[in-house]
Amino acid sequence: SLRIAVETHPDTLADSLPATLALLDGLDHPAVGINFDVLHVWEGGAEPQEAQALLAPHILHYHLKSVTARDRLEVFHPDNVHNPRGHRGGMCGLFDGALDYRRILRGLSCAAEGSLEWFGPKPAATMIADLRRVRELGMTEAA
Image (cartoon, rainbow, N blue to C red; front, side, top):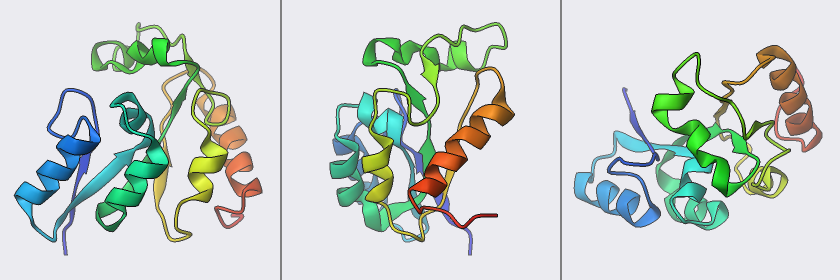
């Protein structure tokens, strides 16, 4: 059966933990879940581990990306990130940024599904490096 994942994202009805919880409560439908964007949850003011614990029954997918510092979050603004000429300053590998992805990933269920998001240069090299480090944490099967 089809499930719909609402992404936690700035300037939406799921742009903060309280707003996301209110949206889920208001919709109250088993087919609606969350695409838990770790960076955007943090951007919205919540500690990712605490938000994950509260939203866990509704999380269908994890969206994983990082930034070097909170003051660089504008790099992910849609007008910039979806523009091929947009700047990429502040984008970094999953384990090289402001978020502690070692701690975050260790708190996830082994059955969790996620995707690495990357808009910067050298996407294959970045994906390989991030996946290697995820595997070192024992979070994936070696493929």
